[in-house]
Image 1: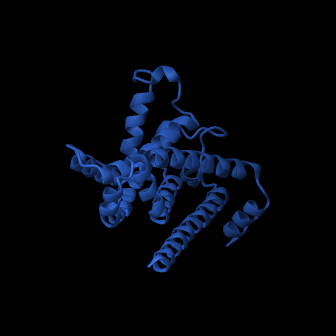
Image 2 (image 1 turned 45 degrees about the vertical axis):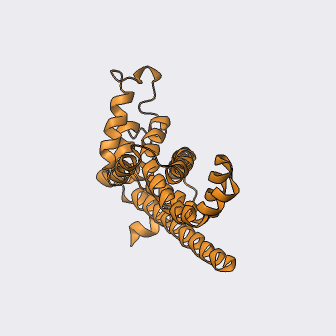
Image 3 (image 1 turned 90 degrees about the vertical axis):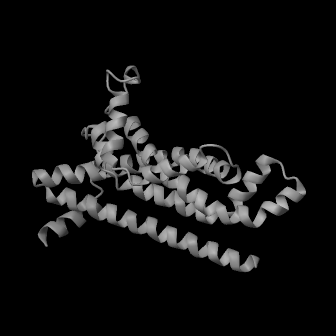
Length: 233
């Protein structure tokens, strides 16, 4: 109980180290989610709206990557960014940028697959009407994305939650450097091993709170989407 009370006190005291770690975690996860979503949502719309050779293979690979161990993704990014790797001259290894790249690779297939699943019923309901009206391709894609926006918001939130809880990939490419690449999950692992349970538990409580907020937002968006569909009918 003494550890818990000290952890709570650490949170409400505005501890500088704790705040720095939380803010870096949010910055890295927000940036990775934004990049992954910006790529995955339009690509998902293209996959849903057009048939071409290799489409099924892309979906199979994307679905498989949803279950790929994060440490494997971290290893791939590490090999690309290391001095002997193709991107080694950029000097990104052990920086927040490397962590963003790793998290983007983890989030992308999640948002992509969930976006495709959200757009499938929209295409089924609208395809005949859009074909009859000869809707331009870009307008067709924008309309589908807009009508599926609530389900897509949920996909984005799921990706953000995945990024926020990541530890294996970011510790490989970030190095868990104090004041530079130390995020909540990696700090919890490190401080627990050192016996500094107050900071580890404080960060754990913050992480749980953020996870609850993300899940509440997902359920809220889903309910709003259901109400929207009912009012349209």
